[in-house]
Image (cartoon, rainbow, N blue to C red; front, side):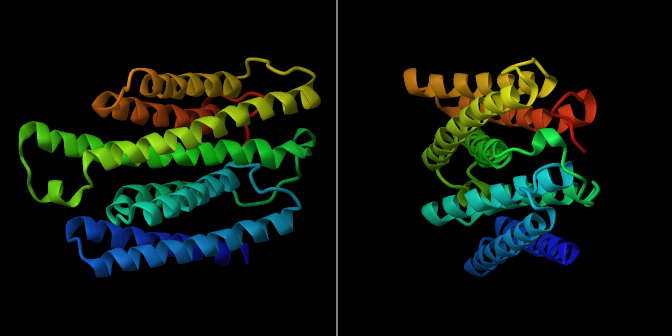
Length: 271
């Protein structure tokens, strides 16, 4: 059942990606609506996969890279659906849904076997800490996609080449607003994830902070987004610089999540 639900989600997300990329090439309501319906159906199937995995494992399914990447993709799609519904813009899907598909497809490269739960993970903090972290990462993923759109749009304006692509993308003000809202969602979630992780670490290992590679890179990620939020709130920092820092911050998020696990190891390493 797990394999069926996972593969079905992958196929539906691939279809949604095709429709949204088709909309980018030729923006018609038919393609946009097909993409919208596909991603919503895929989200429901993905929720079913996650729930079934939870029932089989007996704990929150975020304990290895297959599960974590899947949950990351699920969170990206969930937050994307909220923003697409609010801003009524199909084109957002052209830049966000392919990312969600890529994350889910990457999860297929890792073992889907449900391993015995590490004793340190047998805690009520598992769902809280990891859930908040991935929701925060998902908000940053949306900001990443929107920031790419912002740089493309601003490039057209700077070069005064207002061609077909310029007409398809949303105004810079809308893109900047979406990016800022993602930041105000993602940063508090990341902050809470780090705090809850420290509390969990104290109960599991007897120390709130051990400068484990994952802890260190999580703190680096936090400082990057803290600097971005501080700049926006105090100096009205917007535009290309904010978009570029948002993109850079998301690359650090990916390294913190995936790179640390695969390259650096440590107490938080899992595969």
